Amino acid sequence: MRVLKKYVIHGGKPLYGKVEISGAKNAAVGIIPAALLVQGSCRIENIPQISDVTLMLNILQELGANVRTINRSTVEVDASAICNRPVSYQAGRKIRASYYLLGALLGRFGQAEVPLPGGCDFGGRPIDQHIKGLTALGADVEVKNGFMCAKAKTGRLKGTQIYLDVVTVGATMNLMLAATLAEGMTVIENAAKEPHIVDLANFLNSMGAEISGAGTDVIKIRGVDRLKGGEYSIIPDQIEAGTYMAAVAATGGEIRVNNIIPKHMECITAKLVEMGVKVEEEGDSLIVTRHGPLQRTNIKTMPYPGFPTDMQPQIAAVLCLAEGTSVLTEGVWDNRYRYTEEFRRLGAKIQVDGKIAIIEGVRQLTGAPMEACDLRAGAAMIIAGLAAQGVSEISNVKHIERGYEDIIGKLTGLGADIRVVEVPDPEGQVSAAG
Image 1 (cartoon, helix red, strand yellow):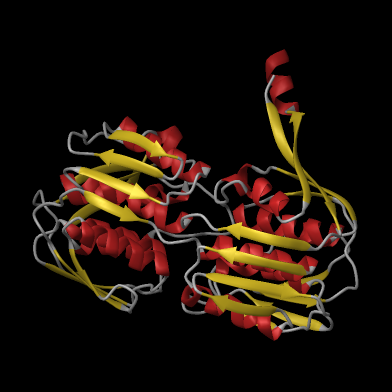
Image 2 (cartoon, one colour; image 1 turned 60 degrees about the vertical axis):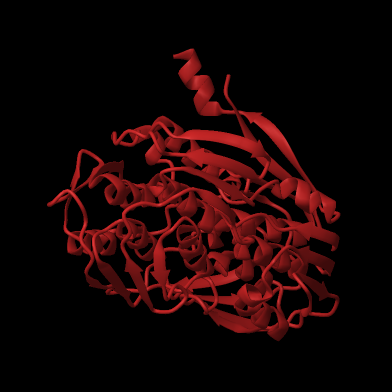
């Protein structure tokens, strides 16, 4: 009989202590496919232990890469002898970042077949800009039988000028991967500027690529004939750090967030300070304290360096407890407010109209059962449960484990009363009986 996990939280306790931030999920799921471009051994350090990373490494092994685990946060990948075969449908559709395999395999072999991506479902996340860019690089791209199929017309992609109609992280990274081994110069205009885009460029450059401008809205890639092996350490996870900062803001207390890049945190820190949270910088750490009442504020998610969309649900959990009425505007994705139904179970007062959520702060939340609907929403439900009086249960936690390494252990280390409980899968019982 299959079992499922749920989290049980006894809330209402402030958080104290220190927490170590893992490597960035959004960087890791781009850098691991980038290893497919390298003819040699890549040693990648500071890899987070999360299910999305495990899935991506398994896909590389299925393609014939030699993947060796050195320790819990370091792997060696040698893709010198990989075969250009279609990526497994079952594996590829489980992870949103599988589309990076398209750019990497197309760049190396001039041909690729990758399943349409899966991952979190919060509205349409089109791949039209990926297709537009790859077509401009000289590929024929079509979607057939659930796969994205791409083939370079002349056997090798050719550098070109690409203007992205919208700022998109996924397309920016995918086109960087595809253009690294292309012939000539590629210029990506209106590129996304997120820290993990800079990290991908730094990884590729350390392996012999020639990429400049990452972190600005114009990225230039001069194609090279081959990449060699090397070593690289992934940046700390901005969103994981922000999640723990939001947790202490909601519960009260004082925590030290270690292994971060303070500049990456400024967009999150600024809003927490507006709300009455004290944030002090010490080297590669932030000390986050909240003892007094939370103040209302207005927040709009924007591409970096704006407030990140991946922190929107977590900050909403904090705003539920702020004095006054806050306005939260989602400036990146549609339909990212499904979690608000779950928050209402705790007594939150939220009204959603399209991309705008009006949050009227309450004095107290009370524990209730919730179901995680996506990765960041699940993290936000943990924050709400930690702040609520009484017991909360969160089901469908597989979403949360896609992007947070040892979240239960880290929160327990801060004094949270949270544990994992295994429960029978009712669907598993039915199928077993049938």
